[in-house]
Length: 82
Image (cartoon, rainbow, N blue to C red; front, side, top):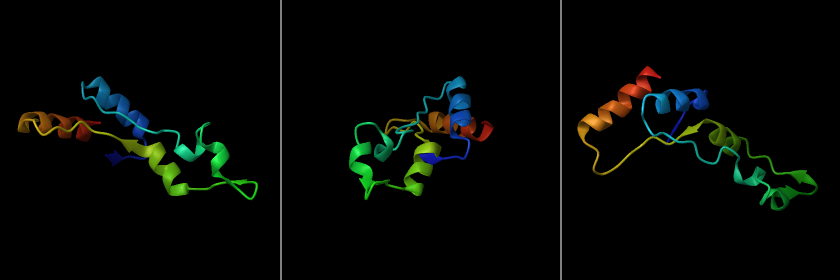
């Protein structure tokens, strides 16, 4: 997984180039509706700034043990171009 300050724009460019990159957990678990109640302490929401930053900026790049060198180079080139 990689991070970038403008991850959503990079994600779109990668996908447009045919690279199946993804973003996971854009809403951090402690902010999700299911877990929000459990992330309150003393009446205040739990603050996890690093978690929130990683949720906002993560990019999951395709990877596989059967990738050829050419496929890996294609991902790297698309990322550099994005």
